[in-house]
Amino acid sequence: MKLIDIGFGNLVSAGRLIAVVSPDSAPIKRMVQEARDRGQLVDATYGRKTQAVLILDNDHLVLSALTPDVISERVSGTDRKEEPC
Image 1 (cartoon, rainbow, N blue to C red):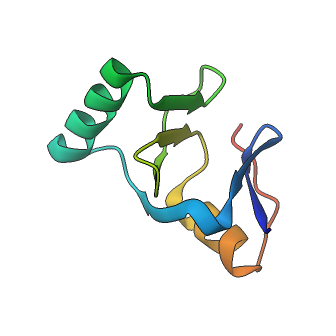
Image 2 (image 1 turned 180 degrees about the vertical axis):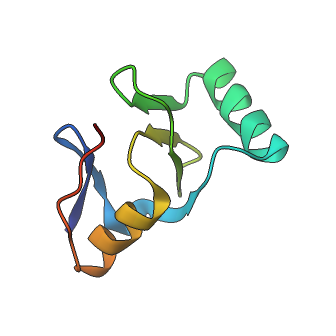
């Protein structure tokens, strides 16, 4: 099982990951609110600004302070070890 570091020592299973999207669009904001209402939202931002929303295959959403580009690089294995300031 491959695990992906999504920032601050938090890990997500690569096998469960469906998509990594930006949180700026209205449909994604709606998805985040619905997941929060259902209790299926994991906030891994540690109080920082949400830069990416990870959509998992079990209808859970994970919020990350890393950008989608950085997470994509970590999934593909070309990790730059970039953390938010």
